[in-house]
Length: 465
Image (cartoon, rainbow, N blue to C red):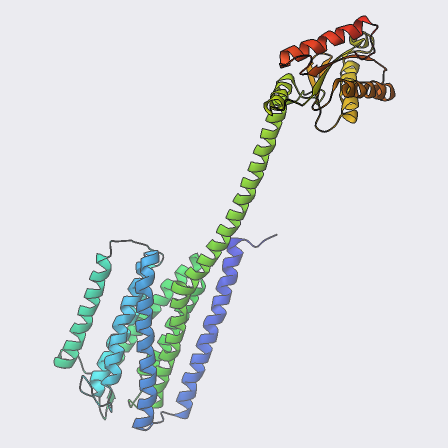
């Protein structure tokens, strides 16, 4: 007996709890290890190298995810994926400004400053937390527009990014201080971090609710991503120097979160549609094969039906002999060959005592006698010859390219064959006519054969004339 849907959901939830526990244990162990070892301070060069690599990777992944969701929207009209893509694009720009403005960087576009870099970092992670919290309400929602809304949302997102960059760069006094060199984190920075953690908890709760309704590996990855991000935020609430080990661990957690996030988006927007396409192709191939088989079977049935119809139109159902219409067609084909030197024969025959057989043994035995005669004739004649039933116990044989003498020999062979297989025994009388000597047309030739049959009857039956 198969598992019920409720049982399967319980198994999926148990599996998810194990994965969450594993993530929490690993991240918690790393965080505790950092606390035990103390807040080691790295050299500026060492930290900036690691920091730049991690942030560049995060920016790259964020922009790649945006690109994937931008094009996948064209196929599935999913504003859920597109919304996440837009959010991560904004996060990517924030992270880009964060690491190029980090204290110790050359300051390519903006001045290198710890507070400025921290502001960009806070903005990016706040946008990310809001993105995943709001995305819960867009999950599995599809809305296909004419494309203008998609571009409008992109323009709004870029405008918001530009506004943040402009205000942080040109008017940093609009924001509270996040980091004071020599003193460390401000209260505003810590509150902002816990606000981000709270939003991520809300996002996790929403995705857990979605997972309970319908388990999905994609949702598992998103939940794990947000959990890792929370541990990253915890690191950012308590570091003392922008170059210390806890700050670096927070970035390492972000690196891991982006790896998992990339896998989630790849699974949901690339791998899954591809697998669905492969599955659809396989189902289509099976359907085509099944359809071809049905068409083949249907064609075969139609052919058999047509053959039966053709046979019914040309063959006597009871005896298997051809009918008079088919006899006329074959005779016409024979004459159409226009062979003046050719000689053909027909034999008209009749049972000598068919009525007596029916009266004595019944009509069923009479029918068997008719079949016996046809079988006896077919045992004797050539494949090119034919036996036709004109009605009752009247039969006509067509023997192409056979003179009268040859036809009489065939007639005697049939009579002799009947002596062997007929049960009950019966006899026949046969009249032979030769074309063109005894008639040029079918009507005249059959009339001559009937006349010869009449003579055979007059002379005592059971003979050939």
